[in-house]
Length: 241
Image: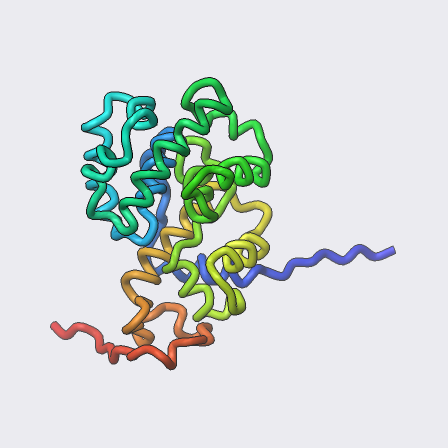
């Protein structure tokens, strides 16, 4: 009997390799504890990184512990994060989410999630107010839990659709499609790297929503440019001198 081995590469591997060659390795320099990551990710949705980081640092400075944040009134939290998108909702939901963790675990910790399957951990996080697919994946992958999950934000979602890696749908659909394409051998750090390459290198620098720089893109030969016809594609010329 002859055994046949499936050696076909995932298209995600080709995308990762091209982006790595263009932008270099993207490995985490430091990881926060999972509760701190939950706080940071919860206020970051639809908000520029610089704005959400500043708001997170204000929270850190105002509250001695995250237990103090859990006991805070929404008005106090709002005064510290007022410039993030949907600030009133986030100021109301974040203390509630922290108190729900305390009530379930007995103290404010998410370290127990590392003993669960990724599906169980994701389900537990998504039961918290204000925690969707992106925030849950951020806690699981970005924090010291370092679990094998992919953060699909608007940049990753948009570029994955334009490349033809995923079909029509919302970011949650793209998340499931991209996770299905991720090789089993990829680690949490590999998925962190893919997120950074597709968000920062590709999505923010070369393939923004309104004016993609297709001529400068290292993936231009394999990109299907789905949806790009609705954007103003910028002409690109190499810098002279």
